[in-house]
Length: 247
Image (cartoon, rainbow, N blue to C red; front, side, top):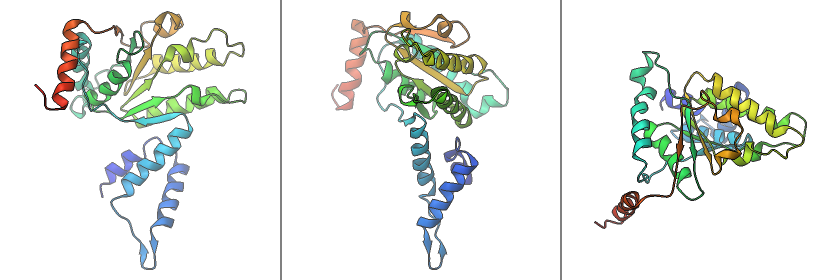
């Protein structure tokens, strides 16, 4: 069993949570002859962490297995920066990209692109569910978001996907001010990030986003994901035909 793989599987957990996992694992694998440690310990650690992250409103997503067609400019931009997340460039202390904002009409593939980004960068994908973090107590929602962001920083390098950020943070009718405080927490995290957490924010209506979220320095670039052109539709059709062995 690789200790490094086990350590990476436990990234993002507190020492108390790691101790709880080890106690549960030992209890489950305790035999009359002693503790039987098998190769499933890494997958068990990942499963335990998935459950803990889910309680915080973070889902461990799966990278896309199907590539996206079109959006050649965005693909070139992303591939040019993928090397900055490799071990070879880490020794040079080069600044890593902070993330992107993908805006466009519903159904244009923004979610698929977010999953593809994780696959292209070869990084784990975390999905931040802001709606699932809202609590009934004063300050609970902001605390949940802050802990989730700290967890993402502990797991880095990773891709942090905030889906439909315009609905989560563009709520101007929120009289309690919770949305505004959550916005401030996320914006501060994005502005002060020193790299490692690549934020992918998707939005259907970019005009609904507060100005401070779209300001330069929060993300590296904003990309508009429109309905595919004729050329892009041909590329998309080719991808799906090849899945079924059709030329």
